[in-house]
Length: 468
Image (cartoon, rainbow, N blue to C red; front, side, top):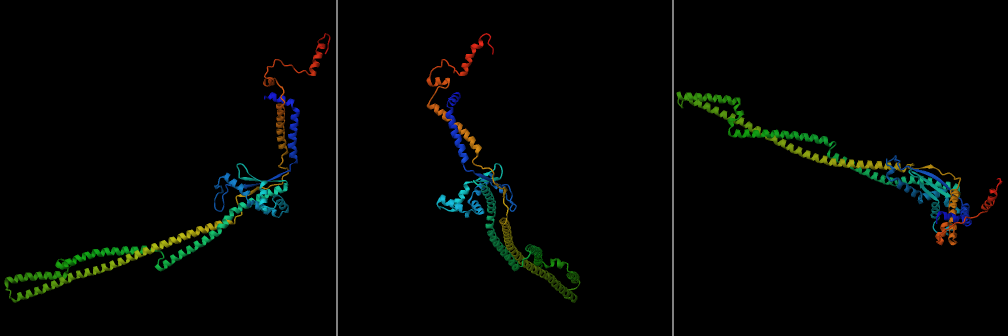
């Protein structure tokens, strides 16, 4: 059906369309006027997602803003917040509400559960776009009651947010207190073990004493090396003294032996001269040879004495070497024992340091949790309190009237088209072709009284002498 056909149908069926429009429009407007008025009060809270916690330095923005705001909406609608609202307004003791509960449920279930569902039905929480604000709206027939409920939900949400933040801190406070106490006992026990070990071993500054003992060991080792070289030399000289004693440096440089040797040489020369002049039995020869024998005996005795001193010197050097070697072995054992004690002390010191660090960390965490549990600030704050609404939010008369106007027009059009469909008439030239399937040869114009009047005046105006 074309637009021209629709217009023709509406012109022909205008009375039925008008009745349909009046019925629909009047019905919607009438229902709107008799519906009970609902007043909506809105309170606004600010959720600072990017706020940094002043106690632990953490940022609340670790969660995506959309997810975080949806979670806050669920918190506002949670039983924890609703029960707090009920307690704030003292709704548990309302006999009127209890009577309504008995009428609706016949006493089934609990009054608190029914009341929570009743409050949730009229509660609406709307996050604002691109911001951290939440609008808490509550609707009821009483404007003052709506404002009181909206403000109660906002205050209960702020208190619950603070409680949700501080409650885990209170729970962990006792845990960290016990852990800090145990860590302190461990630290004191480790310190006591270290002190007892230091007293038993005599170690106060292990590094300093170890350095002193190590330097002493190095000094004794140097002395041992020197004495070993000297002992090797004295052993060689002693061996030479046993086989070639007269070739020793001490023998060659001894003044007495040099004198005796010179005297012996003189006697040898004298005996050689006397042997040419005197016989072997000559008293002078015998006396000279006796002097030579005595001189040789003295040289041999002095040589034995000098070579004997070399052996004594070797014995002295070997004795000193043995004493120094024993001292070196004793000092090495002392250094090794001191190193072992130092290692044990280092282990005990590390235990003390680890226990101290653990105790300090737990103590710091306990203090931080204690501060968090005593905090009275959170990232949620009341931005705007709800005021008593002056105009009802439902029903909206103008909106419903506009809707009634549109629906009435649709109903009028529908009624006209239905009546036309049930009783089809020829309204336009196209209808003859579409309905009767015939061609239109001519159109007789519709004659109206105005057209007849114009036709009756035309001859008179055309006569001569007619005036207008």
